Image (tube, one colour):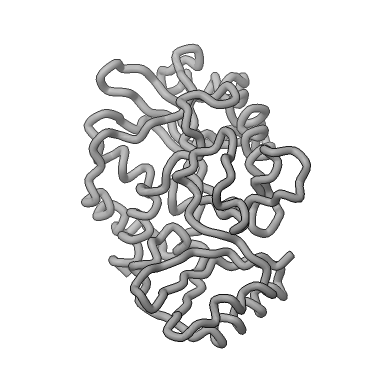
Amino acid sequence: MYNRITNQFEGFINTPSIFENSKFSGFTLFIFPNKISYNSSNQILDKNFSKNLVLGKRVEYFFSAVIKDSSEYQIIVHNIQINDKDRTLGELDFIMRELETSKILHIELMYKFYVYDPEIRVEMERWIGPNRKDSLLKKIEKVKTNQFPLLYTPETEKYLQSIDIGSEDIKQKICFKASLFIPKKFKSYNFPHINKECIVGFWIHLKNFSEYNQEGFEFFAPEKQDWPIDPKNGEEWFSFKEVGEQIQNLHLSKKSPLIWIKKIDGSFERIIVVWW
């Protein structure tokens, strides 16, 4: 349990920002503290950490651990649900203080896996979720139209006043980490706007998975909460046939699994085998 969560934590920390520039589409990017102690993971093993946490909530916990261990920032509140009578308007991820300047920050945290579908006409619309349920542009639009404007609603203003903060004093930033998977034929393609360090593997169709049926290769299909983990930390491996059956079962539920591949030379590869 401890090693697994520590590996998830380190995988989250080591995942780069999806955008290279400090500003993209009107956003300001939150830059992680200069020094991150991997001992921060000790904080996430307390009684409040459930092993059943979904990946989105899990990385919020990891982010919180980093900030609590930092000498640069202080969390004021996090996961603030804003309500209007019986209706939920939305949620603010983190309100923090930058200790050196005393500036107040609102940070929206995102941690995503996207595949690049060249069949989609518009370049930036090509980054989609492995199951085609979401996309990079939809996520950006949601932050622009919902999550950032939420800060300035009367309901949020009322809440902030209760903790002696005014929304006019808050600077909004995003922390957007992502792992990206591309078709093999796009290996040398120059992807505009995207941090190329986020590209960690390829995506393929099941019919092409047979190319990995090679002597000495071993495989593992991690649970979603383990997707951030570096495959070199894998402890359990299966044969090509065994993992092929797992992939087919997941495809029946329209789920595109991430597969770790351990090669005979000791190297590792990450692929997503899409169902569509």
